[in-house]
Length: 146
Image (tube, rainbow, N blue to C red):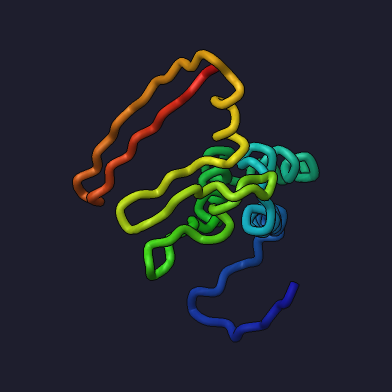
């Protein structure tokens, strides 16, 4: 970790060595939040295992630390053309997740999911339609069980 020295000012005060562990904990949490896809609670619990009990009074609450983890994570946004980033266009199994896309319609599914109804004689379907007037977006979700 890089360190720098600053000249004393009227605001200078005595050092707080007890806070070093709490600051290090926050820094470790922030780094893991950015570089991993671990769930928030998993990051928190694994980092707290090595935290010294003698400094427990100096650390932030679990809720504050979990909020800090969520704030560190970047939110994927659409590009200039309104298209999803490549990371969101694939499943974890590296299959294409967008079947069709134009400026008015996006169909999210995989070819594997489309082949499931072909294999079954009876289908059961449920759907939900949602409008968001502020974003000018219509969303229709359909769930099939065969």
